[in-house]
Image (tube, rainbow, N blue to C red; front, side, top):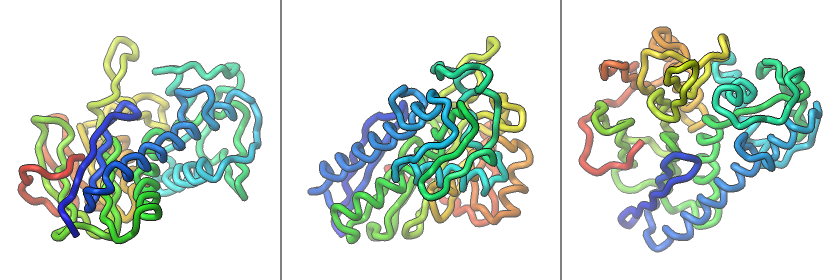
Amino acid sequence: MGPTATARWRAWSTDVELTITDASLLDAAADLCRDVMEEIDAACSRYRIDSELSRFTRSGATRTRVSAGLGELLRDALAAAELTDGLVDPTLGSRLAQLDGPTLGVPASVSRPICWTDVTLEDGVLTAPPGTAFDLGAIGKASAAERVVRTIEGALGAEMGVLVGIGGDIASSIAHPEGGWRILVQDSPGDPADSVALTAGAAIATSSTQHRRYRAGGRLVAHILDPRSLDPVQSPWRTVTCAAVTCVEANAYSTAAVILGHEAVPWLAARGVPARLVDQQYRVTTTEGWPSRPAPREPAGV
């Protein structure tokens, strides 16, 4: 394989980074990435009144047939909820709208809190209580990263290596440059840095309490909600990074760990999840299997 080429831009209020092993195809790959992200935004964004999920919420309906793209996102979101025993719940849109907007246009009587077990997706038909508001933000990024890799491989050839990161969620192709993909794990300048090598087709995801914060009750709070209390998390962790076979799994684990707080380390260890946790005092804790190495000078970033 030839030298890698990288494109970077902003979308979804976060950083997008795409690296491939054929520089001549970088523009085409970036266009495919943007197309996939636009399709996902049109399917599930709670910030767009014309998105497929927003239309379902505002309709007050209990059943609707969904597109194949939205169906994939919902399956990933429900799988993440099951994997984490409901700690990563995709049905918190109403509570997030109360805290951070946008307004949902749903009567308060049907904006009651529900949970992921109230939702089913069978044969392409979504069933949920009337007015259910979804937030697929975290899992949506992870699912998007995986879909981008598959789309680029399908359009431009599986022999080309692809690495895509969307807001800290990084997915990779089986094909990779010589020596593998080297990833810098560092949330912000000044945070502890680490370097990892992704195995073929593996993924990592970072959940942070330092970005996308907003004011609630006169204080800055994280955008991640604890579904047990419906309040923003007050986590001891600045960031949690997890590695897994898929980006959706890695994101589910990292988000759940932020919510669990001090319980996160034994919870991750019991599940055999390689993880790196940075607390609010910048101290680093890792679980077994995390391949800690000195950070390189110019790796791909998380």
